[in-house]
Length: 623
Image 1 (cartoon, one colour):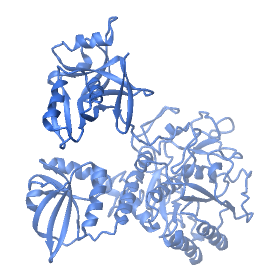
Image 2: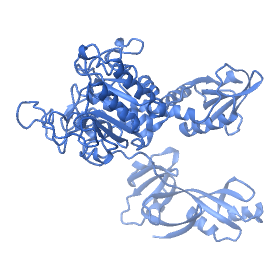
Image 3: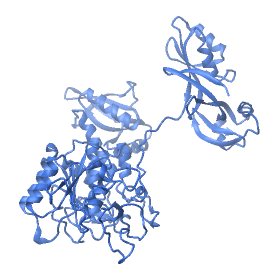
Image 4: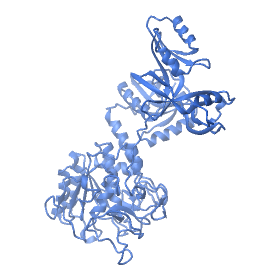
């Protein structure tokens, strides 16, 4: 097939005509993908054409395209091309961008267009035009190539369309990802043939996509527990400054079958994405294992002090007590408070505690501490897990077992559980054997590290959040589940403020980060006497229709910053309303301009999901 060398951007393209694909444009929006002369439609829209392969009956693509162009339902047909070394189809739109030499006047330019039967589409400057091929022109690739050889033409480039790369996050491909329903619940567990409730999850995958990452490797998540297998393949690559309270060294105690709990807890929070096994909520975070829980005051002080002095950002604890004989004394409360308020250079370590599994109407005494995030449990159908302790201190709930368990890592010395008596069913609640050092797990012990992992994602998005702000965000963005009548002032003793929603929480963390990145002087006082509306491109905006107002600024520099971010995030025009307030100029910033109020309302909802507050405004009121 023919090859063509043309200018493209700052370089050149060598184009090869496709031997099988063509681009077709139908008359009156005809769908040519289903026409009797089409073998297969590959792309429904590229450069304004449908890209298809034709039934050739032994004919060449040139012969078949000439034949199809005569069909009454076909308005335009074009060849499809591939750049040398690329498998992406290119379609010429029919337009050609031409820059003439400086001394070529307008009449001479028109003579060049006439010679190639081109029509003038747009004069961009004295020496730059956009032209379009007509039915009497050669194809735009040939025309551009010919124009590049004319002395009067400085530059000629055909407008080509192709599919660009979508820089979407590549999700982990770990073996058990599809069964980790707490990350993304699709409504069915294939290996167990078990139906769950679609969407009854912590929205972790959505949070990864919003972050465009699996979290930051700069965030350190500490697990304080017993039986932590730092040789496990999902934990070993990320171990950071380990410590054992029993050995008072970095040598962690292992091998005791009575202590295996810390390994599954750690994996739910931070298991690495390595293409095998499972994956944690914050796979990129560093993992600080602190082994050896204790009721002792000295040990309590030491474990939390070790975490704060060695750089822990988040601390997860799936242990405690509800025995009234062992409530926390003031020294233990102070040790936890010190970490939660003074860690992270004064921003505070984020501390998560499990509510407990006794099914009582009060929570684990450690989890009741006002500076920690108390985590209860719900199941794969968004129901209350009956074992989960209840109480006024419950912050949020997170997915765990109750009907279908979680998959987690197990220590090499874990003997398993006799779910059905002695025999083969030691690690898997349903009796189905699965590969590798993993097991079924649950309880609030599973829910707490899931929330701890989410906290690590929040700090990945916004490292400047305080521990108090992280707790506030989790509670503010949680989804209400269960009987809404149980919630009093937004809080349920069973579910806290709801099932944690990592995506909404990360969106709020990002919103706060962006709001803090520029020291705005936002004005909250109502403004009056509008002086006009202007589209941000400095095009006058008619005082009609609807928009979404986001804020009022006294500093025009902050308007520029806010407008750039809003336009990039929501792909809508930015409208600025200039006003006077107490003799000073202030600026209302609005997003979008719609004829219908419903369209503005839809944008408002999208903005809220994206972490930006706003309200629908009638532009007539701002004239």
